[in-house]
Length: 454
Image (tube, rainbow, N blue to C red):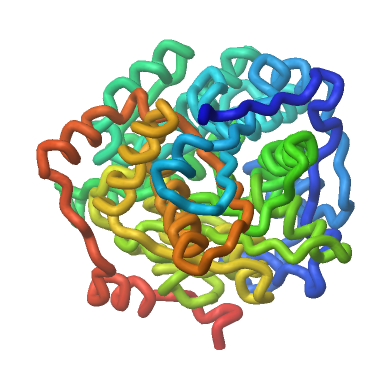
């Protein structure tokens, strides 16, 4: 009983991205200006992003064409394989059929290049010379470094300090792509210096790293900012995952009842789930979409839906999202890509409309599932991806208990080859489970802006 792989012909790699904004029953709440509280205009975003990405950010068109130059680069690893996980099914003794879309075959080992390449392309088209960005675990920073190198752009990456120390090989990969990587908070920006003055031992957060990266872009005319998740155009680019999966499921003669992705900022979950949710909104199959997050940073499962800043220094627009508060610094657990305080506005909006659901699991549960998956399927998942794995396993166990032969599809968003220290710590019993730190999050939520939250 081996795994079965499904691949699309090169000419069936997606030619368009899917924009869920076209099918939502209620429009996304507007982004607000941090100074006035009024809805922002596209011009307000121009200091940070090129015109083409701003147009995608505010678009309500269902299908947006992928430029051929981008498709040619994506074709280096796309179409990514879809596997039927027969060995895992057998190990779980479940009647469920389990499929996983494997994004770890990209050059940097995760789904992140799906948006890094378009973002670098559009910045290059506008004459930008340098990109400033942030990264948590390093998947985004290494992907942006690769994409910048492809288009001849300089790349500066602010990496969350705890991950900078935990994951030296991710840092080395960025440097191999000629990117400059510094630990955040750093003494190179006003935002970083302000944080270090208050807490010299601050482990960092994605909110802090975003503040530093945005500050660099805002102060330099030749520099733009790129974000690896959260924003509409980022989620748009990731829909190649779900669009390919739809065709591959047809090849398998099957159709998912449940679609699962891990969730930090929301990009890989949206990438796999939004095309299926959109199909449901247009009268298709009623698929359950489940976002899985860590209990240590439970944005969707415990964060209120409020207007909040996307960064700690309050340099970004206000967006309505599930949030734990922009000043929240999560515990230093190993899934660095899931430590963001907020969730993508489109994912949060879909949650509020009842189009999806969310689950949270602790670190040890996730790694236990990751090891179980590796033993059955041979692939070591990234720590972030283990959350999707545990979500899929729990659904398969439910099917076993209920005697249901449902079809489960999940996104294995990256491999864990750069994260083996985490697996070493797991096997040596050194990992700790971090629970929802109510006092710290309560303090962070007390600082929510009044705009939009009256």
